[in-house]
Image 1 (cartoon, rainbow, N blue to C red):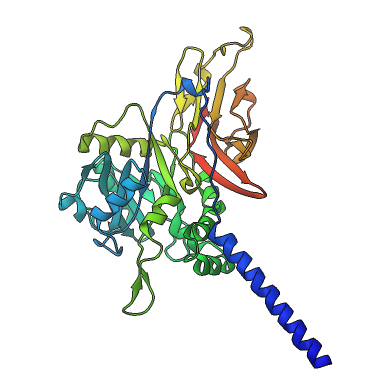
Image 2 (image 1 turned 30 degrees about the vertical axis):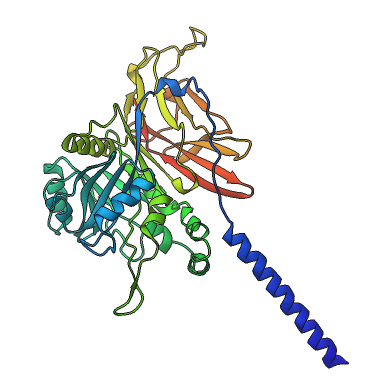
Length: 421
């Protein structure tokens, strides 16, 4: 009798486990998180009429240790509705030498270079001549000579970390680097990615959207007066995982990594269609911090804006420096005697009913204000009373958190505006 009960109970347990596995499989198979955007007219957004283009920065091809041909990856990026594409093969600019830079049915491609230095890998954007691997100072000097942008790659990647956080002269930092996002996950999440990738790659790769707290803390700490450091998102795609000595697997696919996170560049006018000029415009915008970055896998950001304005109509955007001592303005629709130093605006066209969200304003790396499911206006009444480090500078940026039920994802990050004086 006991044996009979044991057999029956064992079978029941096995059936329950099987049912749970089936349910888990279908949950993964049909898992999808998408932000619902709405069409609306924002009075505040209309103040900031600039052109936004989204780009995929930092990926490797057959010119170094990637598995993809540039011609094929351009086609992939076009299908994913990217506006520009920047490769960064290791220690070579051969794609440019081979004449591949240019426009491809509206998509702009140009080559950058990931350069080895004694401190780690350094990304050069907007260069015209190949730069040889070498010591940091020499590499940076060559980048500056070409009026290009120098970006610290994956600073906290345990596999290839940046080794000197006191260096000066660089223009920016990879805040989101998908290779680092992968390596920064706990072993449990890594296992989840590996075992669920074939079932639903979106489910597997959505784990890459975790917030890189350590890198953001570093980013906030190095903002200096009249010398802000730009943050960007990089794919760092290879699609070329070594399994054995001779066998490699195209994992994850370029099309999947190209969809996860992108850098969105803000321009004063639409790209002209001329390679040299547009390459310079994009590079200069990134150097200045006139950009933001987001996990586009949950939806390409719609209607995002972040800026400030004075009563004389002068507008400021991320990457701008505002001398508060010279500003004494009255904001429209406020009492004429109520003088303000700076008014900061931010918003995005997310449907807060379906996807609750918060826009968080940070000052010098600390959250000071939030708005829930709506745009915000933040007023600085008396800048002299605002807490700030020497030389009397404050750096303001925003992050947007989006909620999917109980799950929170920090979806979007802006660059900084400096207010000083």
